[in-house]
Image (cartoon, rainbow, N blue to C red; front, side, top):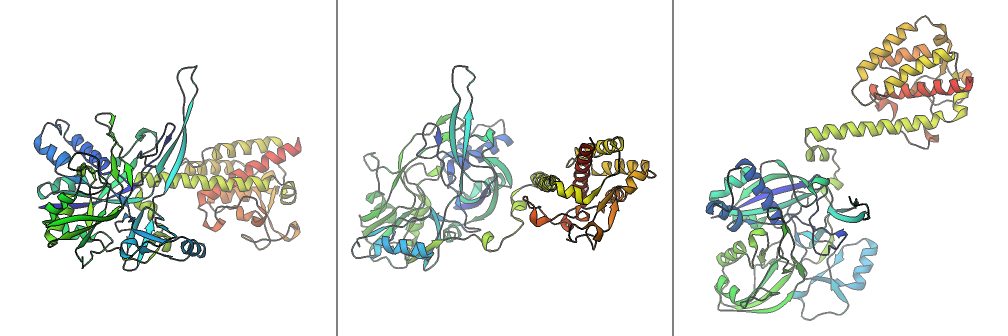
Length: 547
């Protein structure tokens, strides 16, 4: 009995899966994750756990991983739902489609197999690569990609550096795929698919390929068939449709490359008296891949592209059990790598299409990154986000302090050069350790310094002016209307953790660099280092003015 295992892959780094169209200096990537790549990941994981075994040496392991298990390719997920390649049977009136797109409306489409004759002025509808469907509408979506330029320097002096471009699947996207296996192997594959970090595709050591793979669920054929967002037609009228759910590598009875599924093969498999091809809508592609074990590229072959649709006429009785057998068996060669998947009699009666909108965009959530990254990675992201926010606030402060009128109207500096330099030395050392978990030690250092200057009058008479009304006010430049705070008091507040640059009158709206957050939302540590920077620059400015 065949069992199906549903898995999810989330890209944590760009994913480079070379596809057709790649040239020297340019690598074009596919928009799905090939079954062969998934198989390689699971074989690698198995061999890591069983280092003394060889897959080829054991008939049992060879059957399990190489011949009797089908690793279906993973397609982009529509949130929690699996998608299918957009069928080629849909078309639309060119002029009407252009007008509807300009107005942002749904596009009117029709199935060319359902029309009596071809209408002039129509063109195929393939807005995106993948889709989900309901009774009336086809929702399309595509894979986000990124492009990176790289430079390869030559070790030989006479040779110039080479620049090349990588196209890659962007990180942060989820793909859904399936594995078809024998019931006796189900537990083994479930164990291999336990939540884990894996690397897929090329340039794994250069910031590409990191993914999170996880088990979704196991199921029988009926449940697997219901995973696809398309219904079966209930009436056939002596015709049936075959839809390519993946690329198909086909050959005829003479061993020649074919662009359609062999009629004799269909007749025997479906138990019919006669099968004859009526029409088809298809495209072709070139298969490609790389075997890291053999360190060689896979043989390139012509394949019928996923999304192609074939219509056949038949004589006899079409039985559901035979349809199940054909869908489970697949067609063509290299089926264990994800090729050869088909659906029989899908219902393509939709009359509109629109772009699919992910739930995350409709109902934004702040948990997405937490779900994708592990604990260590989340800590790193939080650390760098904090540093970036601190730098943006620092840029803003530096902009304000660069304004001469700001200095002259807000500061009454009474420290001499020796005391100013001593204060600056303390502030420099503390500010240099910002973001490196030295906050508490710096508080102690500043506390000791404040005790040393406790009876020094110059710190009491050096005044910093705050707005009328205290913290958070936005009053005029007129210092007579604003109560001052001494430099000594301000340093004390830094020790207590209550100092904030809201105590100093900044005109936020005039800044060229917006602050990341309002002061009431900043944590004490951020405020502490911002105050360090502020005082540091005050010392530098007034020492320069004195000179």
